[in-house]
Amino acid sequence: MHRPIDESGHGTGGGRGPAPVPPHRPHPTGPGDLADARYAPGDGVPDPGRVDPRVLGALLARHGWRRRGGAAGRYGRWTPPGAGQGGGTSLLVPDSLAFPDSEELIGEALTALARSATPAAREVLTGLAVPSDEIRWWREVPPGPAGTVPWPVQEQLRSAARKVLLAGALAVRGRAGYHGSRHRAAALAALEPVVVATDPGGRALTAFLPLPPGRPVAVRLHHALHAAREAVDYQRATGGTDAFDSAVEAGVSRELTEALVALVRGTEGVRIALAWAPAAGTPEGCAARPEPVEFSPGDLPALRGASARYLTDEPSVPVRITGAVVRLRRSGPRGEGKVKLRVLGGAEVGHVRVVLDEEAYRTAGHAHLVGLPIRVVGRLESRGGFRRLADPSGVVPVQVDEAERDRLMKSMHENLDFFEEACGPGE
Image 1 (cartoon, rainbow, N blue to C red):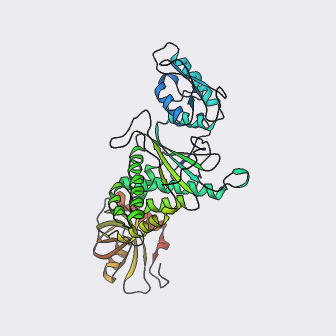
Image 2 (image 1 turned 30 degrees about the vertical axis):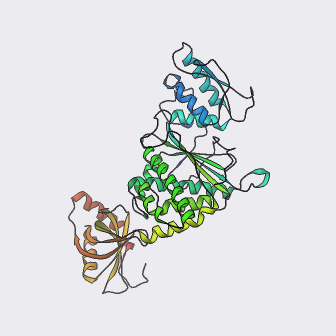
Image 3 (image 1 turned 180 degrees about the vertical axis):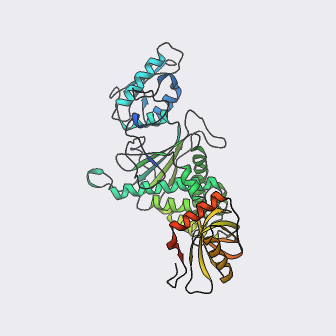
């Protein structure tokens, strides 16, 4: 059994994620920062006429608000997290729009949420303004002074959470034990709309994955995290690692296991929970209320072993790449040389490096000088993150339209220092 994690930070938020690291946007500091049509201009709160009271109630319950009475089937009175019986600001929320004053009551509740200092109120408004699936991380870590979590420990949580999301986005693009640099640009782009919120105590973090673009990532992580948990349990019980092989199809990869190692390291345990957007319902093949997935320090050997295995077992990929030559280098006036290509087609990577024999190197140099890309056949090696092309052959220039050729020529003139045939150290 895994040690349960204290949920005292559940549902709180309002901090800002680290801006320099993509792809996540910081959690808005107030309703006015949420650029969405559901916010009526001038009043800073969602338009009450466009808010489903059932969705509002589901979000209040999710973020720790408690329903304390009210006329059954008509109204409910909600109090914020941590408020005692009858204590704290309360909201009167109708159960449906069937009553004459329903829209007015929803408007009053939204205004109260916008004015509330409770972090859970801002998270409810975020869920209304940007209908999202939510992923929450909790870490049980030793407290710092006055019960706070040191800043470096909070940064570890943010960094590990970003890695988990990136692993999910990569798995959406394709199943692999090790992705390396493949699909990375597309995965980062898929995470651009994600909004993050941090717990003031530094032990919890919530990511809001807006619908519809964020749902594939949430669904893939739902399956991948549970598959990783089952694979770890199988290895700890039997010593076998076969479960990690089949877990790849569910989305488990080196990137995910490395993210989980970073998440668990230095803690007494972690928990990851996922909740679907109330307005969109449960995706096909998923549990309506997924159980949180827990990992403990005792899982680290299995996760590290799986990560190393994924790295060594992922096979090279045969490809035929079309790319623009952006760098040439060799140690002398003759012989083989190294070429760096900006990939235009044939592989989901940004750049590759390849060692060419003298004739192929000369072809690449001529193509570079006249502003033409080249085509080369080879194997994209997993070593180095799928950034190297092994056994290259068939190097030929590729004709392109005038606009593309002019762009390549301009790029060449702006980067003349990349054309390095002079004697010098290798890359």
